[in-house]
Image (cartoon, rainbow, N blue to C red; front, side, top):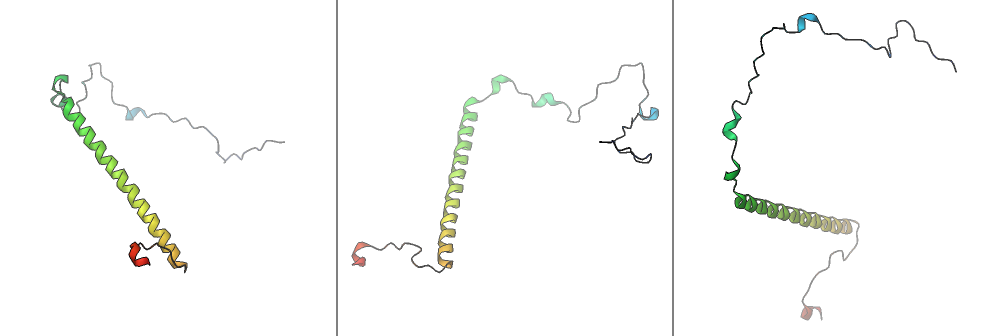
Length: 111
């Protein structure tokens, strides 16, 4: 099998070395650079000591959040189940069948 030779104008697969321009670099100085200031300012005012941690409040909040999430999941499962039952009943009725949904009647009225 012979290797294909590329045309002189075809630059596919060629590695191009990209060098920085000398003018784009900032001038170097012998002085010590100043530390960059944070855009957020002084963050020490948000720092808390470990003694001010309210463990009981945090645990109560976590339990309430867990209970909310459990209720949300149970509600989602209930809605999905209700929608599936409605879809099943609609498919049954739209296909022309009878007796798709059971009708609950008290025992004395049946006889």
